[in-house]
Structures are given as structure tokens and as C-alpha cells.
Image (cartoon, rainbow, N blue to C red; front, side, top):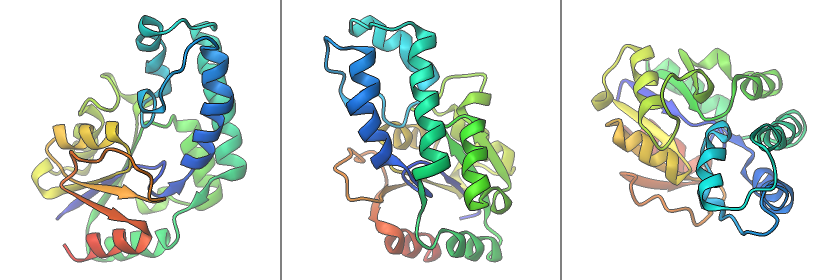
Length: 213
């Protein structure tokens, strides 16, 4: 293992419970008051890509600009005030860097949210590359583009890299890009991670899986 691509939300940054609450109670009911959009349709995805896909399947009551504004407002609040850092994250990242492992942050979150996280938790300093879906020319997760870009920015090939993902879309993206994929259950959620090569639970499980390779 020469490189690791980390997802941000639900892996290094514990924000999923706050996103689930806001999506279920405010964002989705506002966007589609007469329909029930499943969480699986949006989890781990770049919100800026969702509107056309959802508009084909559901009766949306908001414009694309209004839809994206709902996510932007929620994200600013979550990352600035509520999200927490995975216990032991700094120690884990430090240990990996000491072993000479190259690290990339590969996230669907836009750069503004990454900056908010960095302001609070000082994460960027550990990473050799930071790739946001916002900066991709191609589609976000579950397409493989973000992982192909992350590996390329590390100067490595997929067969010597590992991805850590907590969502179905993210795990599919990493697997399609050819990375060994670790599915991470930070909160024990029943997410479909069947495509992952292995699944671990909690910060201790993740540390064991990465430092034993």
C-alpha cells in the first residue's frame, strides 16, 4: 500500500447524523413535499449533480438554484458548528505519513466545506492532494473520476492504493477506479457496502485495517 484516498464525510469527519436529520426533516420535504425521496438516492453524492436526476423521478417544488441553496445553507451550519472529527484521526494520519504513505482527500463536498472543516480540525496539512467533486470535469461519485484523479495527483496507480468510504456511491466509485476499497461504518449504520473489499467498524477498526497493511 503506497497511497490512501480518504472520503471526508462519515469517515474522517462525523457529519452524517446531522446531514440525515436535515435532509429528512427539511431539505427533502421542502424539495418534494408530495413525494418521498429515499436517502439512498442522495447519500454520498455531489448535491450539485442531483437535481436533474431527481426531477426526472419526482415532482420537485423548487428550482435547481433553490435546491442547491438548501444544501449550501445546511452544509455551512453543519461544518462550522456541529460536525466532529473521527476520534484518533490526527494520530492515524500522522502514523500513515510516518510510514511514507501518500494521502489524498477525495470528497463530494465542495471546497468551501473543506475549508470550514480545515479551519476547525486542521486536516489539509496531512494530505498530499485534496480532490473535491466540485473541481472535476467529469461526474462525481459513483463514477470513478474522483478516485482516478486522486490517485493521479499522488503519482500512483490504483493497484497500490486503498480507498476508505462509508457510502454506497463512494464505495462503487473507488471500486470502479480499481482501488482496494475499505467500507467504513463509523456509526454502525446499515449502509450497503457489499461492493467494498472489506468492511470495518469504528476508529479502532479502521486504524487496525490501515496500519496492518
